[in-house]
Length: 65
Ligand SMILES: [Zn+2]
Image (cartoon, rainbow, N blue to C red):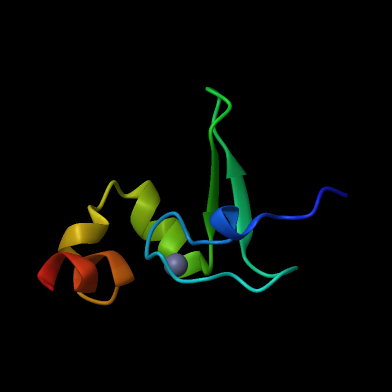
């Protein structure tokens, strides 16, 4: 199994780091791979939410700074 790179280990929604072996991988038809730290993030992403507008994400916090 290919070792996950550091840049791949971030949740595609909230930006939190994902522990090896944890989280979920989602492959789009286009071939793009998304990683989610939790089903919460996966759900929000599937709903089409913008992580920049969701308070509990790292992305939101970064935008604010
Ligand atoms: Zn997440």
